[in-house]
Length: 124
Image (cartoon, rainbow, N blue to C red; front, side):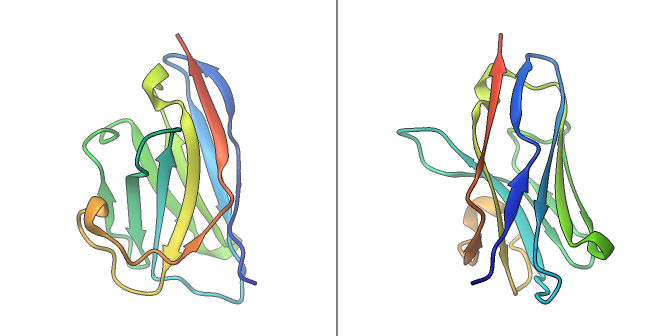
């Protein structure tokens, strides 16, 4: 079973930073990888995606604060989160699919492989 494994979550004060990591199997090559988050009672929100060619897409809610990157040599996807706000509190998920990313991650329904998620809590 293919697995994506997130790490790097935790608790931080507002204005702080966290860097999430998502380790993926070296035997699998995903073209598009992305980050999502979800809080109880709310729909899952797409945050950022990155094509294998380096094209990046961001949701307006995180543009300028979050940066997605990928280290193919280490089989790891990252999400650098700066200037965190209490409303960023959520469970964060890494996801992937083998096609070109949709430029609007909110419309990209192709993600078919998911991690188990990791909690991020931002206190005021």
